[in-house]
Length: 222
Image (tube, rainbow, N blue to C red; front, side):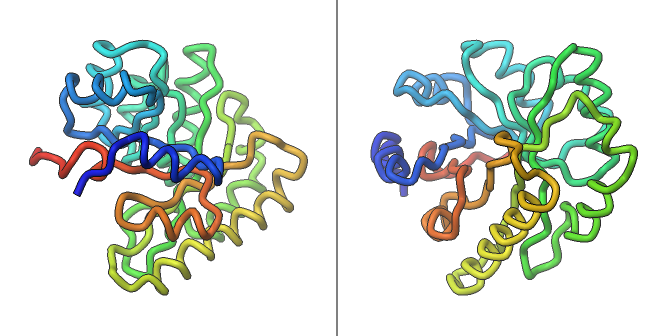
């Protein structure tokens, strides 16, 4: 099922939730159609796909990297990426800082948290985040800006489970905000919710939803 972009935006508008249109696997022409309807924030999960799209599409697009990022790929997106939502380790955050410095930029980042009750392949635990934020090495990073957290819920039709996972992420965000980022206006994003569960995510405090198939249709096979 697809929903017209403007209908989704009308639904999000009262909550001030930002839409990240997930364009992974989609051709340039289809992305341009959505761009021409006013959408400016797009999400990609593979660096090799993102870079040529950046080169071919209008430069006022804000590109979010939403998939797992390897350290050796950071240099390719560092010159232009608007936000990296999928920072899942201290190692990758340090590499982002290093490459951002080379490009004389500060790159906005979200900390990807393990929130799914099923086994998560990527993401921080809560303890890992707190250990990182207390580390002297973290204080030395001047070319990244932590803007909030990101989480991917369990793929399930059990809405109570999804609600529980999203609620937990919101609570942890609130803890980080009050403990480590008090008074820092840029720490304000909770990226949770996709095509199947974005309404529950908004209900639980999401500020940013990543929607692909509802806008573009089911993604192609890679």
